[in-house]
Length: 72
Image (tube, rainbow, N blue to C red):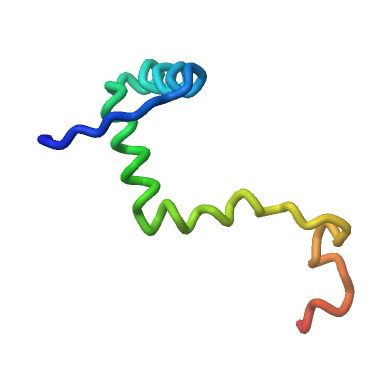
């Protein structure tokens, strides 16, 4: 690795980053690189929809229990 990037982090963000490093046993730089790679990958960008999963309200709990939706 020959490229260096300098970031200014808030105290809270640095604390959370160090905690993640401690929990995973990885150096802080490695944790940051993994997050950057995940954020730039196609797979990482496709997971944005997951925060909306299960957020529709007002419908039936189980569509299989509603008459008319089964054609069998």
